[in-house]
Image (cartoon, rainbow, N blue to C red; front, side, top):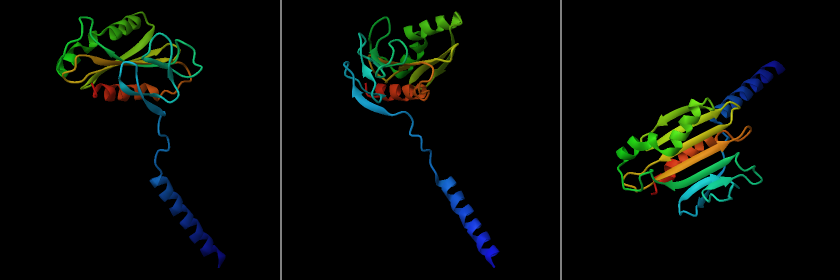
Length: 179
């Protein structure tokens, strides 16, 4: 007489477990970011607790971080020939020639980095991985009719939160949309 109740109990537990698995969302909210206004007046996001230190007011580092390793930057920028209003099509056509990308490609040619480039409708992204698996992501994001663009980058040493490599692209695009 006990066996049917045990069997019913196991079936109910299996059903409840299946429902829990199917309804469980991704508990990982991603890296925690906070909204800041940079000294240049850009409203953007940076990793929670990271602070602007040193000569470059647009670069943020983790507390107690070693200068030159992990870094997150968001800044206003202009092409070498100066700031001038441009359409989104003009910005994206010029994107690959911006200094940050030229420098990274030169390093790739010297086998310092494995570089992958990506063109988006409103941004240009260059992702570089070092021989030791450190990561650098450089982004230029544009707004139609703007006189400047938003230049962003993240440098991640070994053991850093790799999800920041994707977040910098999102943050840079959102920051540029407010230009």
